[in-house]
Length: 102
Image (cartoon, rainbow, N blue to C red; front, side, top):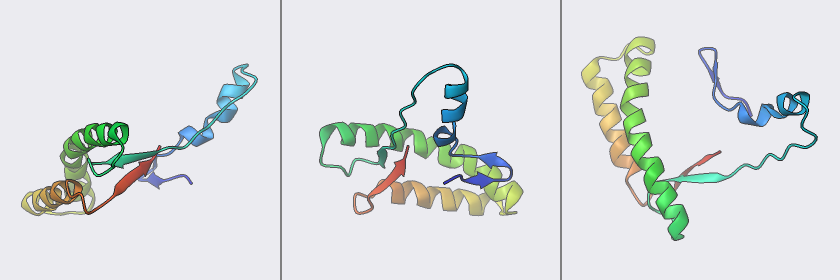
């Protein structure tokens, strides 16, 4: 599945096979993994990956969210900050088992 927003593609890795093959490689292996968001997984390695993902994602909420919410959706800055704060709080919840296919 290709995700596109305002002309920007977000999941292009799955479509890179043809470029790799055209560059002369004989075989391409594509594997999709589920990357957790937060420290909810029981597995230690997945918990560590989830903690790192949560750290980077929390910073991304504001850096990516502010432009989207204020410029594209026309929200007031205070309204956008409130939404971002709520997203950060929810992302830390161990009741919500979020993950991202990578």
